[in-house]
Image 1 (cartoon, helix red, strand yellow):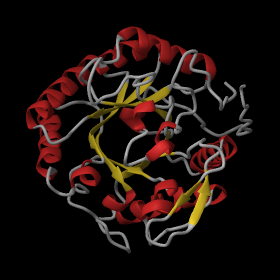
Image 2: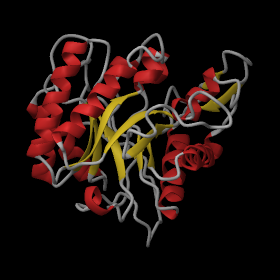
Image 3: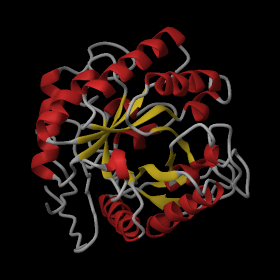
Image 4: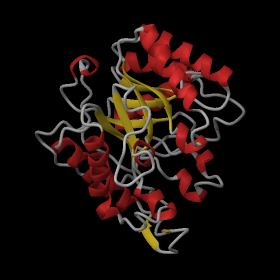
Length: 324
């Protein structure tokens, strides 16, 4: 069954990805997070995504949605095929160079990222040194993030260079918000904002319902932007889980039940957030294009495999459909 999302946003820049973004940043980017680890694929072991699956998934996006901008999560292990496939289809890419605890792999990621940025200057519009490195590893690998930033600077890539992490890390884990050590080193800041996980882990914002999510996203953006007024700030991940239908999140600290998983709520969060972002000319990335079964893990539980706007198995039907 195809559940239609009706969005009436005439005159706004919804899903617009201009070729000139990297040069003049005139219009906001409206993108979707893209990871090809569908079916039984996992980034942790086994087979890597091949060219065929990447091209199939991008074709689904072209056919089923108006998204012409994606954010990708790495440049190794088959993911390098995303960039020529995106170029062929006129899709712009925010490219994350994946940074983790293996320094040798990080070196490969940085060198491959530089080469791809040079090879696809019209396709890759932004570069990020990692995603949620501090969230995953505390401060242990800050030096690796800085090594990446320095390498991209030395290589003189033409794309703006940034770092992506949760809004909490970009506030330096404080309220009111304070700059962190990367604020002075980046061209742009990417913040990931998920009320769904605040509802589980936060005592500061322990209960945000779906109808409040868009306002919550914008409030966190405003905090980080106020703290970093000279930087371009974009919301690099936001979304809501579509299933298990009707199940609520439970806060580990307060024991509140708050936020309900459903396709209707996912639709509401995506639609209302993009509308508010477009009105304020703020760039954003919906999380995520295709559900990933491997995300049903200890950290995310069964909710982890229901973030996608489209299914994780063939024919990859999108249960949220947006007008072109």
